[in-house]
Length: 133
Image 1 (cartoon, rainbow, N blue to C red):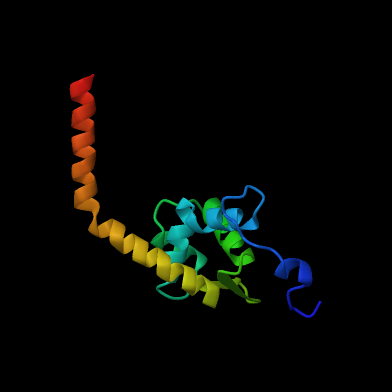
Image 2 (tube, rainbow, N blue to C red):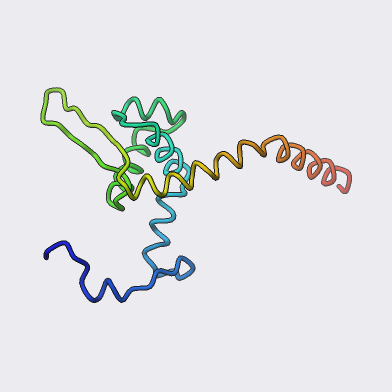
């Protein structure tokens, strides 16, 4: 194969609402708890595994490795492994990863700016539920 999409792939139409569509799995990789955080952390530059793990607080080594592997397979993350002792592995965003991450950063900015409103809405909800119980 010469790296060009074949006729079968060119004819595919992505529909994230279809259970059989590959875009659904990709969406899960990107928007899963650790996918979002790993991508947005990588937006700050190139990271070695342990530095990325420290940046994404709370993620286990296993979950970060699985997340990075899925994002690499999907073409969003580049893994650069140098054959040294000890091994030197760096992770960075691909152009596709940067495009997706720009949108995630915008979403995070909206969410972080709205935290006071969310906390107030949660308090009102909890109060109403307690009063009706």
